[in-house]
Image (tube, rainbow, N blue to C red; front, side):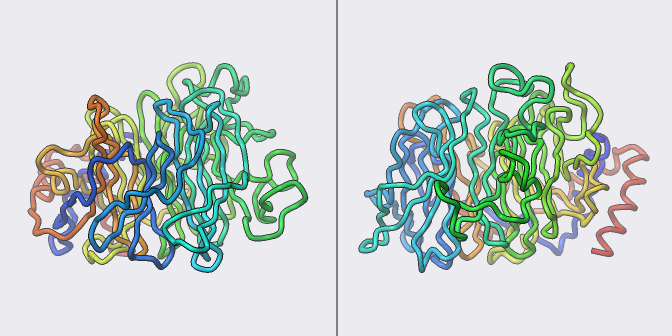
Length: 445
């Protein structure tokens, strides 16, 4: 499987048309000196402001796009945020009807390290301030301090989606992990290692602050009504393609492989992405690993830790004003600082094998040619589809040094095309055989 991914990478670089000019972009810092920014988003139909999270201060801050000015007063300071390395304020999503109802949702770990998904409302008198009292949608106990997931987002169906990690530690084992299966494969009253789906508009049952969508795949199974998909280790950033409705998940691997999982817009949910038995398309090393569970879905892209990175950051399919980037799914690695993009090749889920894309581009040197990125925490997307890279900063510096970068047009080079041609010439015959498949997919897409 990994050979196929390597072959596809070489092929994609080599056959990517020069007329696409996809490399002609750069990243421009628009805000700096930030205290560990972890996420950025915008309210629907509001191109004038960006909202970003500070992981350990619990603050949601506003960046005005006209002047790239960070307002001194936070939009909201979320209380009692835990400050472990992977804990804190992790997710933010604005209701699709935010302009009318002023509702937004946050995902944090509290002082005890447990996940809290909460609803807030903007002030009726000041659009740059929120009311401080939340309504709790869901609390999830976290057995360890890592693998919290934390992403929130609304799908094209109007439902709120949330990602949860497997509870931490390693191999999905230990205290707080289901013996034998691990949390991620446990479908008996266990919300860890999952994507969850909420209905936040239908009047809830007494004592609840949300309703369960009737079309969730495990409705009727006690404790599992909210589960949309499962088999995830630490889904660190997911997104919906705003044009197609397709769903992408960056799932952080353990010792060997990082992966991008995919769910077509027509999915009815219930996908099993394989953890803890699988790490990418490979059996998880050790006693936990094994054959792919029956019906499980492999990733559409994966990469090994050697030389590529160690912690994937899921991003977005680009739908902004730069024509050459249209339809490219951007993702990154927080350890190496690499930024890449792929184009999904349209394969059916049963055909997923870790190499289901028709192009692969490495944007790192074009976006940040001098020093690269330091600890990418997330990507961001604004109301117009512009794409941002969120840099947590250098953890060895005492002062706040996080940055927000905007991807903008810039005259590019053909360096990556040349690198792809060299890779293809050096590739074994097996890679060249795969080229014909990819060319067919490209020509019929």
